[in-house]
Length: 394
Image (cartoon, helix red, strand yellow):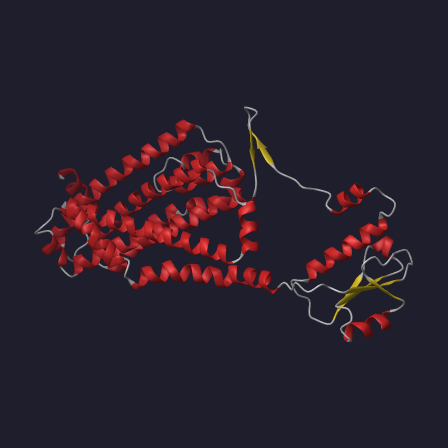
């Protein structure tokens, strides 16, 4: 086994047991679930399958009872409500046809089931208001529109829009930032700590500078992919636990195979770019705190597509999004946003991927040279002129 692969294996095993990794990997989905998913699951599970017993008071005198119980006045309806003979009742005022306003009464505080109650009442009112019309007209009035949006391009082609148009790029951007930044920051901290503890000198007695950094980059890359896999398993498990929510999500979100493939390519290449940069930053920094401050510059730069996501979503082919598609730090997120929104020319995708791949190699080579040079100045941050000199000399 090559020395860099041994280092990669060690980095992987060590980092997946770190408290920080476990906290982000399992704590973050739990936090998102608590603030977003749990209310939805509770709402769907709390929907009662009890048959609602609804009454009404008609002050106009135009509505037939149907499946509802008709009352001559509100006092009689209230009496039956508190005796649990009905679960709800509503009052149709004399000016209903002019205002459309009705009052709905229940013995319980307004709850998620209120929507189901209102739907039944609307259906009842429409049946009466459209009495005499053909049944298909009544049904169409109850559900007058079922729309789909399409975006036309200059070539006459069209692409279907939906919730996935917004969800996929934003979700990818968030996963990309969280996983890659977590893994690359582990690399940054590891390099700085090993420099401070002088462990680096011991390691370099057995391996070369390039083998050491390459092993760290690949090992932590595997950590990032493991994190994504765990998040996917958790997401699938949560969806599977509630068939209603799962059906809604799967019906609204459609992910194409090409986008998934390209997302994987951009994720892997994007990680290597950031990890190589963090390795260089860790080599330059003299303390973990200083390393974090330097790394923040690159992290903010990589987050630009997410910051201006609204502009990219509404103008995917504008000059700025196209420029960000070629810049290594922003191209992964920007390109996935554009691919989810519009038809991106094949040459732009190829050029973007080639730039990312070339940037990975170049940045890693530069990081190795900087790393090698930094060992000559322990405890002192090298100046820019010194770094340029060491990089040129190799």
